[in-house]
Length: 433
Image 1 (cartoon, rainbow, N blue to C red):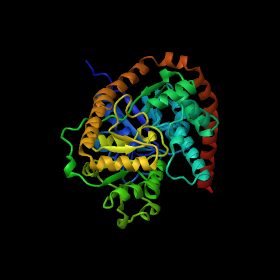
Image 2 (tube, helix red, strand yellow):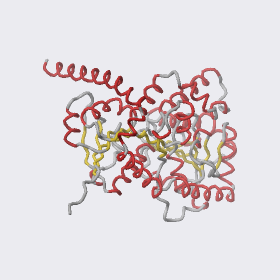
Image 3 (tube, rainbow, N blue to C red):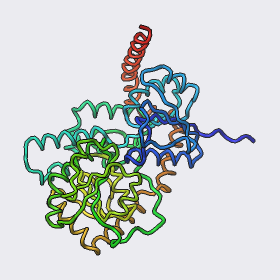
Image 4 (spheres, helix red, strand yellow):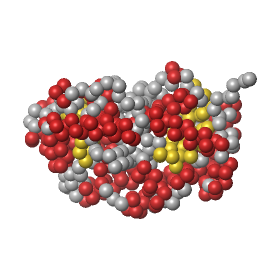
């Protein structure tokens, strides 16, 4: 008896995944690992240039195929591949390639990995910019940190980015959401059907060894890809407001800042005399996190969930963050450190955690328990596979229920298709000239 054919998956990536550079890259690798464990046949494609920290997908048995924007060669490629599932990595890839997928492989399940709601992150960024323009107070940002979902909706609703992103969500058969808060925002305020959304948080394997003890650790740490705007803003807030308050209480304190793609504006902040060390990229983020005593994540805007904080919990490193940093990460569980909304409270909490071994040990234990209760790959990986298999089995009825999605595909894909074909024709005229 012949074996059934393995489910064939095509992932269209916004970038080639870099799990050691960003939480988004790590999450993509976790999703791919779930597919691999199921024995699915995976092809990863992207129109992006290869980054210096990209994962070696081929070594994992995943086919790597570069693709072009606005080029009909993609139609030939996907028609020959004939995937059962197409996963778009962020909504821009659905905008670019969704109409081609529907034209060439209409029966393929279309899944969107949102990573986070980029329109929510952008709206919060704009609100922070407005606040910085109107006030010189670098200490208190509490009014930005905890708005009701209704306020978030009102701030987002008129933006082009929100309209584009939510339209892409409607056009897909299933959408992976890393944040429960963002699920509630979409369902309660934007009125999306809940059955289009699937909670897929960061998925990790629990640590197999005990974390380094309090006495073996030293220094504060901040880590984050500098191409991600919230991380750069966090470094600026550390430099201008928070770190001077910490040093006033701990004159010998040292802060080590790591991040991929460190720009000159960041290295210019390096000042050993102030204990402020910009260390560039960490080849092993978990190793440097394990050596630190406290992780600092002073995020003034952002969305989704924070990979740096999961890494801190994995290594038993207590953290101090803001309500934005803690959002959607702990449910009803205790926070493994402190959540604060002013620079002074942030500094005070950081110093207390750094010096108080009992409080530090409690936070470490809370972090490990949080991983057990919310982030296990062994729980969420199979749940994702089961949801995709259910959607494959019931795809016609899922699409019949989503009339808004089919309507948006009809209109948006026509305009995108004609624009792409015009760009392709224009490029060919240039080549022939």
